[in-house]
Image (cartoon, rainbow, N blue to C red; front, side):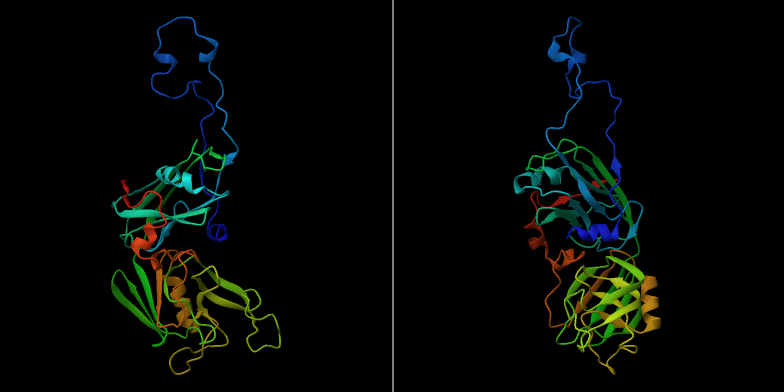
Length: 324
């Protein structure tokens, strides 16, 4: 799932290692603490050389300076695999701090992606910092960190959307108060929508969508074939679930009851309104579909795992954030 970060956010901000040090090892009790006298050759300063090729990060999401929703995890994608034996050390060097301390944990999806989420949703207004001090840290496969990485972001208003597939409705709340109830259509019995909670990945005013790209049909003669550019697209899963307007279902709701190929359809005016309400990390929770919950790494669906399931993928277990 490394492509998620690439699609959503520019590369992590690097905090470069200083090139103008005094040449010491940086350890307490080094040569500077010795009595004056002739130094041996072994005590002479020498450039620090990496122990092996570099361990680098592909991305850290969210991007620095952004304002995200209460269900947004911190997602770190490594360029190369991190061995299971090295994950505890890596987790300990990726410190999460918050202005309102919360309990949370890391969880590994495969060997290249680690996400950190709070046990429950973030409190709105929280300022968050991820400080990945990975310099010299091993990935267990012969690579070592050569940079530190820091991202800071803020949790915005608590905006949530609850979709009832059977009721053909989407109820939108902001900071616990109802805002609007919209009419929707979701997936057909043949192509049901994912259940569960999916944090918004991103959104675009227009997206080119084809049935061939998601493995539905590449046959132009098929009734399930489509090749459309559609507006007001809120992205929920990497496998292609969106909340948006569809020209094939212009007036969704219980009266029309037309099924989609897995997306959630809104009318044109409702789709534009919803697009303006949501941001990356806002939770969209879908119930009533015949399909299972979206996998937690299919986008940012971290809250589709209960807390014990989440901890089962952590090398260091539950912890409390540092305080900003």
